[in-house]
Length: 163
Length: 235
Image 1: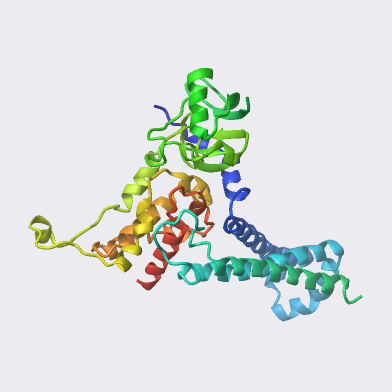
Image 2 (image 1 turned 90 degrees about the vertical axis):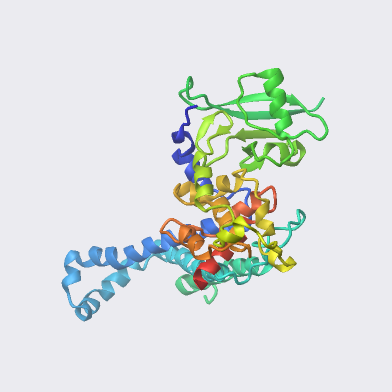
């Protein structure tokens, strides 16, 4: 019998299994969101620190003492970033950072076995003990607080609520 | 007569260059399972369809496949509960052999790597037993849930970490390791913990919970993995 490993590891199958939580429980959605937000926030951080500096002052900015750099380029950076596209991006980043942080705390608790149910005899009618009410409450709290952070960001950047 | 539409993944590596989906109309009968429908196709409509099954009653774990996007046991899944139009594919994360048949070599290699048996160090007692190994209800309940695993591979197929990192042991092996670790009769705690304390070991589980959702026996591998991780942090 010849097994065709390539068939099972095609990129589309891997991506489908990794990134499409359709049909699965909220825990799987949480996994996907946690990964996506982690990658995006990391990329944002790199771009924020490195590329902004390079764009404004060229690679030479990294040799300039930090105090002089701050004094020279702060206004230029502020001017560059002050447009609606970057502001909208910051709102999304705000949502992602808040979600990733709070959901990360949920996962940390789970890793220590806290907030999970205890193993017991199998009951086909009951949901898995790992999908505990505490865990789900913290997940939904992370969504709610992230949304609050996004609304706050919209107001701070666009002045929608405060006018 | 009501019919069920089966869209079945077909691929024979000895003759096909590309996979395809063949569509079959199967007459519905009350209580029909997905496996019943596939056997009807094989007996009456297309003899070349390759499937694997054995007990037809959710015990042997042979007939795992992806039905409408989720891994399920074909014999344990009523057509009525998944819909009148079914897309049937092989299990993901397992290498394909032909049509709906997948290769379990890697899966069982990982299964074996966690030493799924009781390890005792009192060899004299083992050779000439003087007593029984009694357990309280509380001791039994620590692992009994995880001992129901039938190694059907559905959890392994649903795991997004196995998908992106094929070297990851997978939920079945990790849950089974915890099952023996939590057993009061086992005497190899430190050795067991070392097995999965690797770069691509238990720490790669990100608690997506899909394993527990698709398990047909209620084993809850995600819970076992988190409890195993707690044991590892305790040392």
